[in-house]
Length: 417
Image 1 (cartoon, helix red, strand yellow):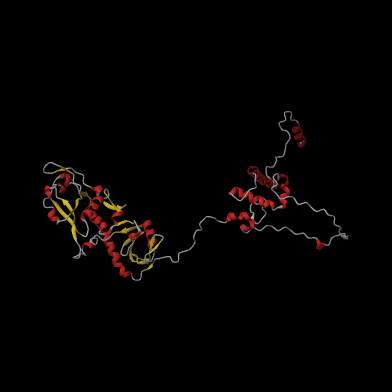
Image 2 (cartoon, helix red, strand yellow):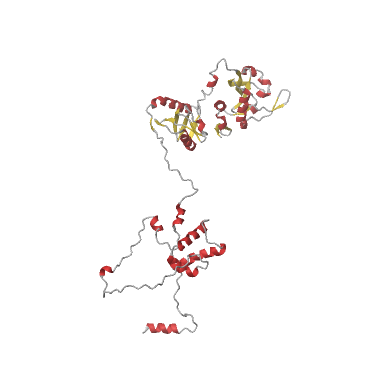
């Protein structure tokens, strides 16, 4: 059977025109010349809109400027675009000189000499760098020399790559035996709660003799070098002794940055907090007492409250001040016990009392009492807080650190703000 003849008969027998003439699909790919014309047409559209050639202004207009500049210097591209240059943006076409020149008669050999026939194979373009790419064939004039300024950073601050002159590293501490007892005693104080750990709050806390915990390791500030102020920031070289027998001479601000991330501050030993009261001379003026009292009331409304203490001040001996406690509402109409008293010099005890009252304000006792004459009284100097916490707050007032902390009533402890 002749299949080719059968297929031809089928194709010819198409009364409804369903098959029709088979046409080749036209390619949608643009030729190099079409791309060149389209790029030039964008310049024409710009000129038609603004009635001027593009200039070096914004990014879009600058790209058209460099494109036109490239076309004006490329004679071959100009030949293609002459028909489309309706605004005379390209240079005028140079006319050939047709002057007749008489050439001498030259005899031509039947076959040219082989040495005069030059056949040079086009070398492949070698691309090893960005310069090779930019220096290649640029049909649209995108990579003109003037346009290379795109690679020049302007108005962008250069990132400093200057390395520090010195980087502190930990090294074995040769005289660690001198510091080991100090670090050991600090651990003992922490275990007995004479010292406590609090969040690190400020660089000013880094002083000689202070302790910190960095990433779980106790360290001691053995030395603070000369402090230098640069752009409002104080810095100094430190000598830090770590409990693992190493040391570091890191900068103060470097240590602070690490402590902010993963560190704690160790408070002073509570037994030493009141040393300022011991070094008294005849020139110091005694101004009164700050005292802490405990109620001996049998009233269930009072006796059922744990850690209830009165914080007050007196200009006379505390023992004299509380003689008539059972008759005074300020003492809850009951006898009291003196827990401790701080003798004050060169200061106003009332101010210290007010500061302590504000610090423990959220723990203030809220009860209604009546005196002997049935007058209502609401005492405001009694607070629900463990005595060791009250004692610690007094210490923070003496060191000036009280502003960095607050009393957490639920936890029953002082925490960082």
